[in-house]
Length: 311
Image 1: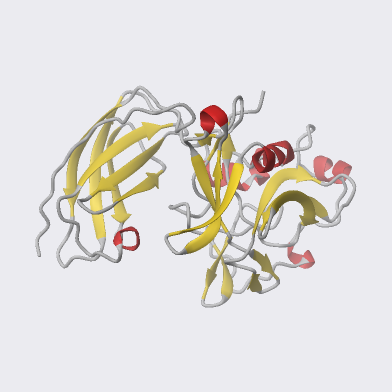
Image 2: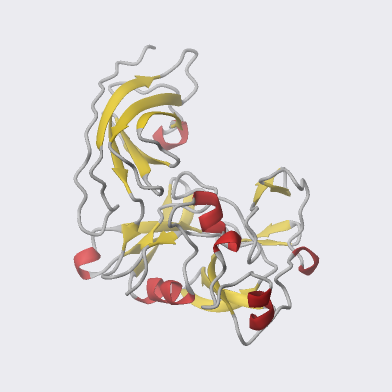
């Protein structure tokens, strides 16, 4: 069956609390599904103007029956081309009929409270909110993904990694040692070279501070839900920000060579070490509830980037 395609290129209006908008113009030039159909499509578009380093494109595909949004990074001023793997978001469909789409260029992220940071809508290593993404020990910037029941380094350096003290060079180091060795800044946050969000996404993206994770736990409404078959929490702003939200999947944690608790709990790193325990750093954890806590630097945990600073 050949798809009937309707092409439309506009910059969507952005409501308060949503992705920070840029002034760039967007013109969609092509939406192509190659035969034999595979559940993927190539979207080509041009972006006018000068882009900030951290700009992202959000491509929303609409059909008669459903819609889905995909985030693309590393966009450039001028011509862009991205392959969108839409099958899992459209019930396994290998071809889209009566498809139209909107491309929005923005700075990325969702602001969930006044003067708060902009929270990314997916984890490092993921392209959609429900994807688990990569797992990191605290201070790690390589990241590890789960393949064939093993931890595989994203840079190809290991095909059977183990999250352990021997593989965690930040483990057992106090605040002064972490600073003198360049792991953290004078202010007590992971240095940009050791910040997984900044290394992977660039621009002004970074790992959240302990305070930002603490505020996320207390300034938002948390609802246990399932998104595209993945369990996690919908975290929604309050008051004027009640119309915007992010989804945090229960990605579990890396422990040794195993993936533990995936589907029932999540654990996300902050950029801040626990000054009272040389083996731990601050995290946000959730399962039956949600709260911040101090946890082992050796475990593999998720990273949800932010940008902008809390005033």
